[in-house]
Length: 205
Image (cartoon, rainbow, N blue to C red):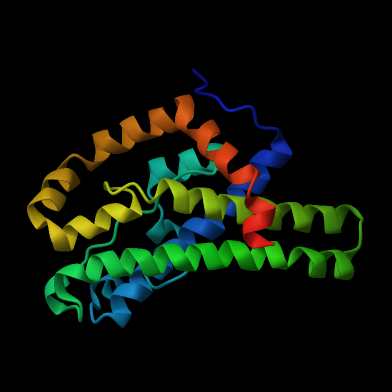
Protein backbone atom coordinates (compact mmCIF):
# COMPACT_ATOMS: atom_id res chain seq x y z
CA UNK A 1 0.00 0.00 0.00
CA UNK A 2 1.25 3.48 -0.93
CA UNK A 3 0.25 5.80 1.88
CA UNK A 4 2.98 8.32 1.03
CA UNK A 5 2.84 9.40 -2.63
CA UNK A 6 6.20 10.06 -4.25
CA UNK A 7 6.12 13.84 -4.79
CA UNK A 8 8.98 16.14 -5.71
CA UNK A 9 8.97 19.60 -4.18
CA UNK A 10 7.96 21.13 -7.52
CA UNK A 11 5.11 18.66 -7.98
CA UNK A 12 3.93 19.32 -4.43
CA UNK A 13 3.83 23.08 -5.11
CA UNK A 14 1.92 22.49 -8.34
CA UNK A 15 -0.62 20.28 -6.60
CA UNK A 16 -0.98 22.73 -3.71
CA UNK A 17 -1.83 25.45 -6.22
CA UNK A 18 -4.25 23.15 -8.07
CA UNK A 19 -5.94 22.09 -4.82
CA UNK A 20 -6.52 25.70 -3.76
CA UNK A 21 -7.96 26.66 -7.15
CA UNK A 22 -10.16 23.59 -7.66
CA UNK A 23 -11.49 23.33 -4.11
CA UNK A 24 -12.26 27.05 -3.88
CA UNK A 25 -13.93 27.14 -7.28
CA UNK A 26 -15.98 24.00 -6.65
CA UNK A 27 -17.21 25.32 -3.31
CA UNK A 28 -18.28 28.54 -5.00
CA UNK A 29 -20.00 26.56 -7.77
CA UNK A 30 -21.99 24.61 -5.18
CA UNK A 31 -23.11 27.80 -3.45
CA UNK A 32 -23.86 29.50 -6.76
CA UNK A 33 -25.94 26.55 -7.93
CA UNK A 34 -27.92 26.65 -4.70
CA UNK A 35 -28.45 30.40 -5.08
CA UNK A 36 -29.65 30.03 -8.67
CA UNK A 37 -32.21 27.45 -7.53
CA UNK A 38 -33.47 29.69 -4.73
CA UNK A 39 -31.50 28.58 -1.66
CA UNK A 40 -29.58 31.49 -0.12
CA UNK A 41 -28.30 29.41 2.81
CA UNK A 42 -24.82 28.67 1.40
CA UNK A 43 -24.47 32.35 0.49
CA UNK A 44 -25.24 33.37 4.07
CA UNK A 45 -22.72 30.75 5.24
CA UNK A 46 -20.00 32.55 3.26
CA UNK A 47 -19.68 29.87 0.60
CA UNK A 48 -20.02 32.29 -2.33
CA UNK A 49 -16.72 33.93 -1.39
CA UNK A 50 -13.25 33.10 -2.70
CA UNK A 51 -11.75 32.41 0.72
CA UNK A 52 -10.35 28.87 0.39
CA UNK A 53 -10.56 28.29 4.14
CA UNK A 54 -14.36 28.61 4.03
CA UNK A 55 -14.57 26.03 1.24
CA UNK A 56 -12.08 23.34 2.14
CA UNK A 57 -12.41 20.28 4.30
CA UNK A 58 -9.04 19.75 6.03
CA UNK A 59 -8.81 16.03 5.25
CA UNK A 60 -10.10 16.48 1.72
CA UNK A 61 -7.61 19.28 1.08
CA UNK A 62 -4.61 17.31 2.35
CA UNK A 63 -5.58 14.28 0.29
CA UNK A 64 -6.00 16.44 -2.80
CA UNK A 65 -2.59 18.05 -2.37
CA UNK A 66 -1.07 14.59 -2.21
CA UNK A 67 -3.10 12.82 -4.90
CA UNK A 68 -5.22 15.36 -6.88
CA UNK A 69 -8.30 13.67 -5.41
CA UNK A 70 -10.23 15.37 -2.65
CA UNK A 71 -13.44 17.06 -1.60
CA UNK A 72 -14.78 20.34 -0.28
CA UNK A 73 -16.66 20.98 2.92
CA UNK A 74 -20.28 20.00 2.17
CA UNK A 75 -22.80 22.81 1.87
CA UNK A 76 -26.06 22.85 3.79
CA UNK A 77 -28.94 22.76 1.31
CA UNK A 78 -32.65 23.30 1.92
CA UNK A 79 -34.61 21.51 -0.82
CA UNK A 80 -37.85 23.05 0.48
CA UNK A 81 -36.93 26.51 -0.80
CA UNK A 82 -35.44 25.37 -4.10
CA UNK A 83 -37.22 25.60 -7.42
CA UNK A 84 -36.66 21.90 -8.09
CA UNK A 85 -37.56 20.91 -4.50
CA UNK A 86 -36.16 17.46 -3.63
CA UNK A 87 -34.25 17.28 -6.91
CA UNK A 88 -32.57 20.61 -6.15
CA UNK A 89 -29.48 19.16 -4.42
CA UNK A 90 -28.96 16.82 -7.38
CA UNK A 91 -29.04 19.78 -9.79
CA UNK A 92 -26.72 21.79 -7.54
CA UNK A 93 -24.22 18.94 -7.60
CA UNK A 94 -24.46 18.56 -11.37
CA UNK A 95 -23.95 22.28 -11.93
CA UNK A 96 -20.94 22.37 -9.62
CA UNK A 97 -19.29 19.35 -11.24
CA UNK A 98 -19.88 20.78 -14.73
CA UNK A 99 -18.40 24.07 -13.57
CA UNK A 100 -15.31 22.25 -12.31
CA UNK A 101 -14.91 20.49 -15.65
CA UNK A 102 -15.21 23.87 -17.38
CA UNK A 103 -12.50 25.23 -15.08
CA UNK A 104 -10.19 22.40 -16.10
CA UNK A 105 -10.98 22.94 -19.78
CA UNK A 106 -10.15 26.64 -19.48
CA UNK A 107 -6.83 25.87 -17.78
CA UNK A 108 -5.95 23.39 -20.54
CA UNK A 109 -6.83 25.86 -23.30
CA UNK A 110 -4.74 28.61 -21.71
CA UNK A 111 -1.49 26.67 -22.18
CA UNK A 112 -0.76 27.94 -25.72
CA UNK A 113 -1.46 31.51 -24.61
CA UNK A 114 0.91 31.11 -21.66
CA UNK A 115 3.61 29.80 -24.00
CA UNK A 116 3.13 32.61 -26.52
CA UNK A 117 3.33 35.27 -23.80
CA UNK A 118 6.02 33.81 -21.54
CA UNK A 119 7.94 31.62 -23.98
CA UNK A 120 9.83 28.48 -23.07
CA UNK A 121 11.78 29.95 -20.16
CA UNK A 122 11.40 29.01 -16.53
CA UNK A 123 8.39 31.32 -16.05
CA UNK A 124 6.60 29.86 -19.05
CA UNK A 125 7.34 26.28 -18.02
CA UNK A 126 6.12 26.98 -14.49
CA UNK A 127 2.84 28.58 -15.58
CA UNK A 128 2.16 25.85 -18.14
CA UNK A 129 2.89 23.22 -15.49
CA UNK A 130 0.46 24.89 -13.07
CA UNK A 131 -2.22 25.00 -15.76
CA UNK A 132 -1.72 21.36 -16.72
CA UNK A 133 -1.78 20.08 -13.15
CA UNK A 134 -4.87 22.17 -12.35
CA UNK A 135 -6.64 20.82 -15.45
CA UNK A 136 -5.79 17.24 -14.46
CA UNK A 137 -6.79 17.86 -10.85
CA UNK A 138 -10.14 19.28 -11.99
CA UNK A 139 -10.97 16.15 -13.96
CA UNK A 140 -9.73 13.80 -11.22
CA UNK A 141 -11.74 15.74 -8.64
CA UNK A 142 -14.92 15.37 -10.69
CA UNK A 143 -14.40 11.62 -11.19
CA UNK A 144 -13.96 10.87 -7.47
CA UNK A 145 -16.82 13.20 -6.50
CA UNK A 146 -19.30 11.26 -8.63
CA UNK A 147 -19.47 8.71 -5.79
CA UNK A 148 -22.79 9.49 -4.04
CA UNK A 149 -21.67 9.68 -0.43
CA UNK A 150 -20.88 12.64 1.78
CA UNK A 151 -18.42 14.30 2.06
CA UNK A 152 -18.10 13.85 -1.73
CA UNK A 153 -20.17 16.27 -3.80
CA UNK A 154 -22.56 13.70 -5.26
CA UNK A 155 -23.53 12.88 -1.69
CA UNK A 156 -25.49 16.14 -1.60
CA UNK A 157 -28.25 14.48 -3.61
CA UNK A 158 -29.36 12.62 -0.45
CA UNK A 159 -30.32 15.96 1.10
CA UNK A 160 -33.25 15.99 -1.31
CA UNK A 161 -33.90 12.36 -2.14
CA UNK A 162 -33.22 10.86 1.29
CA UNK A 163 -32.93 13.45 4.08
CA UNK A 164 -32.77 10.77 6.78
CA UNK A 165 -29.89 9.07 4.95
CA UNK A 166 -28.10 12.41 4.56
CA UNK A 167 -28.54 13.15 8.27
CA UNK A 168 -27.20 9.74 9.29
CA UNK A 169 -24.21 9.97 6.98
CA UNK A 170 -23.45 13.52 8.10
CA UNK A 171 -23.15 12.34 11.71
CA UNK A 172 -20.41 9.92 10.62
CA UNK A 173 -18.75 12.28 8.13
CA UNK A 174 -15.44 12.38 9.99
CA UNK A 175 -14.82 8.60 10.13
CA UNK A 176 -16.08 8.30 6.55
CA UNK A 177 -13.59 11.00 5.53
CA UNK A 178 -10.75 9.16 7.23
CA UNK A 179 -11.63 5.83 5.60
CA UNK A 180 -11.99 7.53 2.22
CA UNK A 181 -8.64 9.29 2.62
CA UNK A 182 -6.89 6.04 3.48
CA UNK A 183 -8.53 4.28 0.53
CA UNK A 184 -7.39 7.02 -1.86
CA UNK A 185 -3.83 7.05 -0.52
CA UNK A 186 -3.65 3.26 -0.52
CA UNK A 187 -4.95 2.47 -3.96
CA UNK A 188 -7.80 4.46 -5.44
CA UNK A 189 -5.60 7.49 -6.08
CA UNK A 190 -3.20 5.91 -8.59
CA UNK A 191 -6.11 4.16 -10.34
CA UNK A 192 -8.11 7.37 -10.84
CA UNK A 193 -5.02 9.32 -11.89
CA UNK A 194 -4.44 6.60 -14.48
CA UNK A 195 -7.93 7.22 -15.81
CA UNK A 196 -7.15 10.93 -16.09
CA UNK A 197 -3.65 10.95 -17.59
CA UNK A 198 -4.54 9.06 -20.75
CA UNK A 199 -7.67 10.88 -21.91
CA UNK A 200 -6.73 14.31 -20.52
CA UNK A 201 -5.48 15.83 -23.79
CA UNK A 202 -8.32 14.28 -25.76
CA UNK A 203 -10.96 15.35 -23.25
CA UNK A 204 -9.83 18.95 -23.05
CA UNK A 205 -8.24 19.17 -26.51
